[in-house]
Image 1 (cartoon, helix red, strand yellow):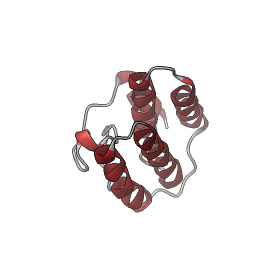
Image 2 (image 1 turned 30 degrees about the horizontal axis):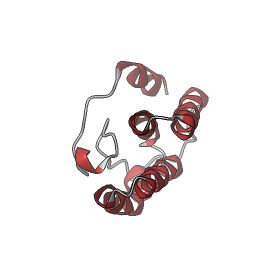
Image 3 (image 1 turned 90 degrees about the horizontal axis):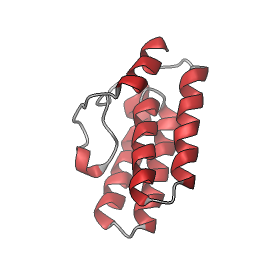
Length: 116
């Protein structure tokens, strides 16, 4: 169970990705930034849940019912999964990625998380 705070470098990168997701004009870029923020946030319950809330909001804005429903499920399990250390490492958080499928972590994010 993780009880430590998110390290400053990871928090800065997470916030930068979330900010980039809010300001990107291209929907694909918004998803890409949210996916990167998701990978960074997985070990910490509240940032992880906040990321899924942002994904849910984007899915609603795009009228993507399947993605929105998938995000509702993820919102429910994000905090407990993070708190217990039971989450699929590297998973992008999207519905199409699957709820429990581990994925490769991009090198730059892996370096940040390893240093944490």
